[in-house]
Image 1: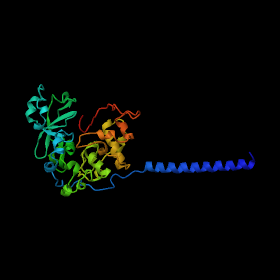
Image 2: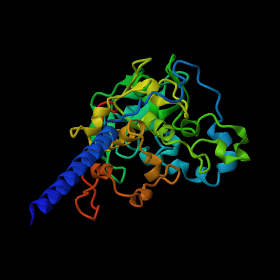
Image 3: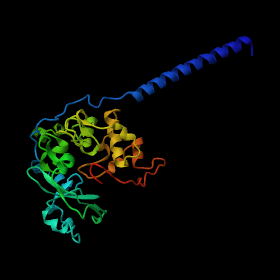
Image 4: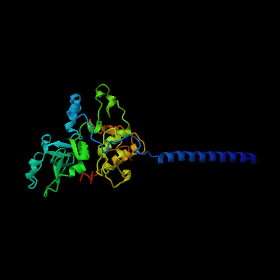
Length: 337
């Protein structure tokens, strides 16, 4: 190779190396900048913290049109049975049989809290208030008791439900008086204050198929109950202050999103933290409703959703086969299990 040819090829090599280095540096800068870019979860929308509970359409009115669809299955829906009246849960009418300390209290039990794995016992304690029994039962898949907690020393607590449970197990919670308008989850809890014209235009109601509800709005609604471990800035209570669907939950409800990467947190709660963080801080669009059908009481849609890093919370993502799901124990200091 002649000196002129060598010099030419050397210059070309240097030029392409420079272009590659500069290009790679630019790409890396863009990628890193994108990764570091975070949204302010409080920047959009409004909230109703400290305001009176708004007037809302009750489930009884909603059932006038939805009685043959949603109404027909709501008594068996996981969201519909967060609290049940004794008359609606005959499977537990004899649950205290054989328990010497609990049997005398059987007639006092008016409501049951929970159903799937843990069961608590309630009775009325004034308008919009429940007293809760310190005793609770752990259940198996067939609703059989596998363990009792505090069965030997049952006592009624008139304040615990109002201070810890009411925000996620009742509707229309008045934070000032710690009372509720209705026990359990009414339609308002997810759909908010509905526009009565939605009968002619369903896009006017939150979460309808035509409403195109924004991901951060959907996430605020679901997180208002499922994102456990936060507190309302305005009250210090472990549940939101007068959250109205459509609000920005995070303007008043404060959580530590570092828990999304906390391996010591049980996988179920960590999954919720990670999904909420991804939406409200990183601007992603996969919400709870992308995978879970509330009215359908089903999570079958998540099998159709493209695999992402969040799947590894519950599934083995190192292979193409996601079954079986990882085994983990659901636990919550707030809910005392």
